[in-house]
Length: 172
Image (cartoon, rainbow, N blue to C red; front, side):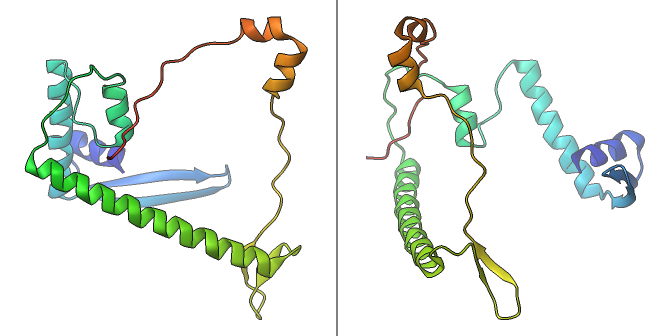
């Protein structure tokens, strides 16, 4: 969608047609009407990004992973919390508690369904619609590091690499 909006901005048109060939067999076209609002938002967004490039600064992180990439290590300093930050921390705690409660409920429901199924692989409605499946995944192959270490300790030690620990956000 972004690419289509970009093309509309560059070409100065209000409609873009996207052609897609699905699986090499099904050709479809999609009409995308690009509004002035979409155009303005697109230009503002990329102007902001370009300003970051010109200034050599990172844009504000949008996700926790973005923040980890921006600041992979701490410097040991302490920041004084603002009133807004304290409210956000309390909201964060509440959400984590709610999430834990939901995960516990999910576990209980999964156990109920698995108990209901026993050795069966599916639960179906009376009209044949599948509601739940519980099947074994395909087998995978993994390296048994303990066996490798005990069998070839010298070779094992050659391949041990220490990595820096990642930062963890822990609410107190």
